[in-house]
Length: 280
Image 1 (tube, helix red, strand yellow):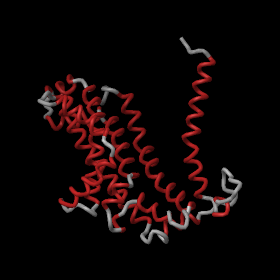
Image 2 (tube, helix red, strand yellow; image 1 turned 60 degrees about the horizontal axis):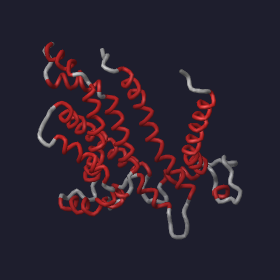
Image 3 (cartoon, one colour; image 1 turned 135 degrees about the horizontal axis):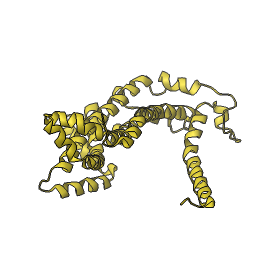
């Protein structure tokens, strides 16, 4: 039975309104990035730039304000984000498989702790993690920052992948074992393709977390040549005022890799969700 026309119109209107409210800050950020300073600080704001300019983007890429090339920050962020996605994805999948397939002591306690850990504010862990990284000689290093991000991504990844692993019928693994497949082959050829949608979803979460995070990166990294892109943004904020043109340009450049990563994996996410257990 189809919903009444007025209800469908109301739902569509509400959906469009939510989309417009959510997308407006992104639109204004991109628009401001192309505006000259005169239009940015004009008393009569314009939605679109009347005289578009790439000067703010050149200022960001040249590194004139930050003192370090934009590409150095970009490479550091890319290394941290990709390493976080790869390590957290692998560890989360192994842990989720163990939780979903085996019964062991304190299993329920472990699952509850995954939820409890996610409730702890990240800011409350800055000082303890700073002390731990200093003791392990990982302070002011990308490896230490990656370890912190992996730790934050694992609880969400394990909890989410557990549902995907549990949804895979055991009969598929048993049939593969009867055909002579070993544990590793069953894991990579049977289980991994079926839980790929969940793995992609957790990778998106891990990538966004590692790419956009500022507090831990700013606290744990001292050398500018090891800093990430979010740290670069703070150079455009000053006591005498904020340079909004470069700020919006840098924010736009910071957003593009996240959008590109999502577009790269979204096809796999959707196709895997509708494919189910019918795999070739």
